[in-house]
Image (cartoon, rainbow, N blue to C red; front, top):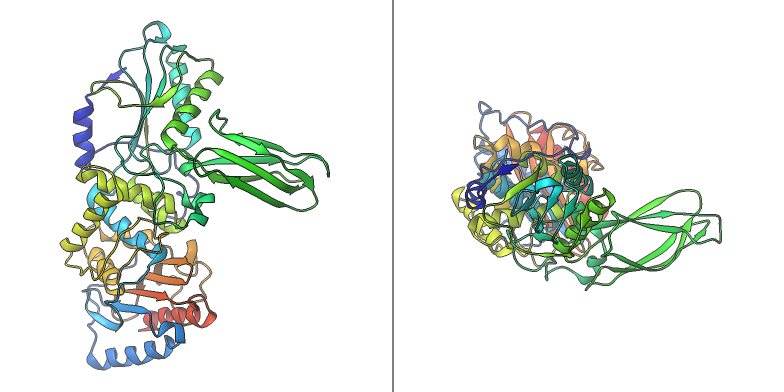
Length: 487
């Protein structure tokens, strides 16, 4: 067994030196990021070129909803090329993830890995662990039930046959409510609004796998992973089409099913769970028992011993890959986990401490913070605020740093992949990388464009208007990217 000192491990984690590793998710193994070249030797912009660029961008960005948008285009040195209401704090939606990704890479480092461990007070002599088994999380956003099952298998292979105590979850690295109070209550039924915890399994969700029968007969509802803490009520009939309702009790893991599911095809639905640490402990206990390892006690939460026996250690993907996946998928859960993880370097792993880190990274880069308000990390909260010039200058200045290519390469290629794959661009295809953002009445886009003659530019366009998703808005954004690519 590996004996380690918790205080020393915590100190290493806070210094961003922690080690870990993770069996890569297929989504995370998407095409390897290809950063845009900075082209440092490119000629600068002349006054005449800037005037022409501004005229073309004004024409492209002339839709009525864009008149009140915050827009900033800056050169590789963060100097403005085109601006409109650039200092106005606006709702950014998922473009907020750029702030979190930059802060995480700067604070934790691109090779940082999260750990999840099984720990105990004593070595399980003779195959019996006399006391409690602790499941200790440090915020891994991508931890899956298969990872946890691998830990249980490791215990079994090591000869553990019985746990004499309880299964206790230690998620104390993060603090505060799991669910952000700034989110729309209507979103809380869905997996994209799952809670945040230092010990979060399957991105804070449970899978319901429906197996239809013959038409008119009830379908079978399987809970994955099996858990005694998730309760299913109601039922679903097999029919010729799917019309299904899953009602979640926001205070507990009770789910009520009604409606019908189409015959012939199995389907899965993911819903968020509450009390994430206890849920992970319950899943662990069930897996242990299914593996033939008896557990005498129940489940709960607690603080793992300062000097534990580490019985199993799981290591996440490198942070650079986590940030790339967050940007590619626009993964809200990853963003929320990362905001609290960087916050944990300042003490408590909360949104508030995460905001302090984000602000310190902006100050370090000399980026203005006009009206910045950090309610969450994902941009799901309508109360988030940031200005276009803050986003554009952060991108430009981060890209110019030694490790800046990682942030550039983490953004999806416009017209090719991720949430920007369906943007209809011509010259900008393969020359632009961007993060999009959409919530009610918000349409936002921020990223980089590689120009033909002047190297890389950074941009941000934040539209807060009831017409934000109208065709002319998206068409104008796309034309602007093509204009920049041709410049």
